[in-house]
Image (cartoon, rainbow over all chains, first blue to last red; front, top):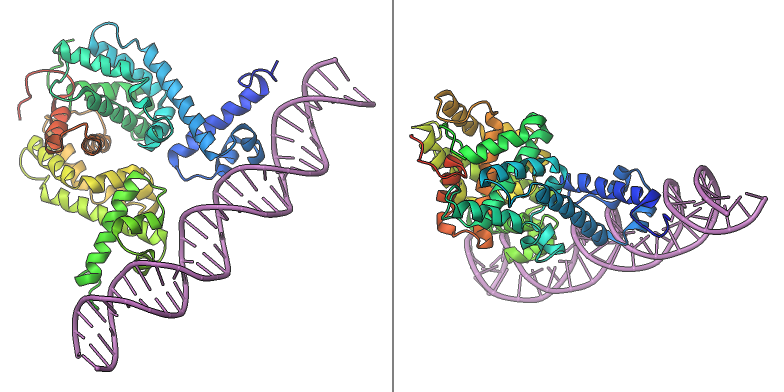
Length: 194
Length: 194
DNA sequence: CCTCTATGAGACACCGATGTCTCATGATTA
DNA sequence: TAATCATGAGACATCGGTGTCTCATAGAGG
């Protein structure tokens, strides 16, 4: 059983532990040693090498794992349904929930592109579509590339997660704060209509 | 003359070339080799070692240099003068002008803290004060820590610079785009009063 | 009891980055 | 011209991370 499926049973658990520890450690220090990661995952360095041939292999796996998690969060937010403003709220909330992965993926801007060239316009296409839809409906800022607006949204999500990580922001209010700043901007004003 | 002042003449120029190249290269790859940096600065690796004893020394110098550049940009923006909204505009514009330094310093969130512990609440205190002033005057979003709002502003500036770097945003309109998104948010609405 | 599996500890060689060194070459200055 | 300075090229040893290996152990399942 467990010998046929590498993602279930003991091996699956060890594998996930390594991936999780690697994401956490690498998000905070991209030059971390494989020994560091193994220690954080509470496994021997030998074991780490049994699961991932070399450093590149591990990196690739962690990136893929994080992309998958974020992809799921995007899908769950159903960005193509309902008013764009509400969809963005669902989206941001979902992204904050997988904040660890966001922190990791965005800790190195070129990491994804190097290991997964072309995946930039892949899983996050629904987000771009959502922004475009909002722009077409006249409720979102137009005259600015949707691709960049997406980047800006993610930057705010990242900043929110990092703020919670540093204790500057209360963890439970991160999504709300980010959404508020994103929707209304820095200025005090009556809220926009949905 | 030039032998007494290490920051003027030939030595000063070489030193600045190395610092500038190091910022540019390291912003895009923090694991870059000293040989990479020397090549980008168009100097020999020996020369680099003559100016900076070891890698840590160079890192420290680049961070200090970048902090100084940003500090100057902040001072030039005179954040304590005039209406907060206009001060923020000047500030963002000034930050975009030193975008290379911003890209470098923010490429590694923990770089500054490791090399210059405690400098986080140093040169950028005027920015926090500006935000607080805006909050006190009731024109800026309150109920959110000013420290985090500052981080969010810098994240948007960073994203704008990066967008220009990738060709997603036209380089000449970066500051304006960032200011607009920052002030008005994602939603289309009548502009707020200053 | 025996076997298979997963693991940790450690030894080992390899390689690339690093830091130090010397030497030769132009450029600048006295 | 002579002396000094800044530099590049390259040799060199060192160090640490990496990848591969073996061996001993513990647990699960037959």
